[in-house]
Image (cartoon, rainbow, N blue to C red; front, side, top):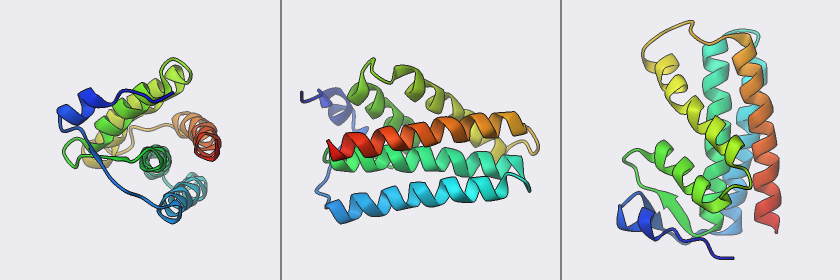
Length: 143
């Protein structure tokens, strides 16, 4: 079933692209790398581990978007990426996509505004959800 991304296209939130399986694989590799790095950094800095784990979820979503022939526009790219995922997945993974999108402003604050606001529990929860999301994305791309 083809999803309707017309509202995102008309609003300039996404743009059509041509991508290759190689490009999609490279983006998925970035997501894998970021999960490993977030796990490594977890014992050193929770804010950075959180940011890296969030980035892994963003990369996974980007890979899916590329597989469907789209990319987010550069203005509000993270927000538009998760808006795309809501449309793409509908109710199927709504709770997971909503959770990851709720991490977006928290990550932004941790990176740019407030040091030490992220807890170890939050990082571990985000890592768990990001691993789940990445596996779903890989399965959806294969299908």
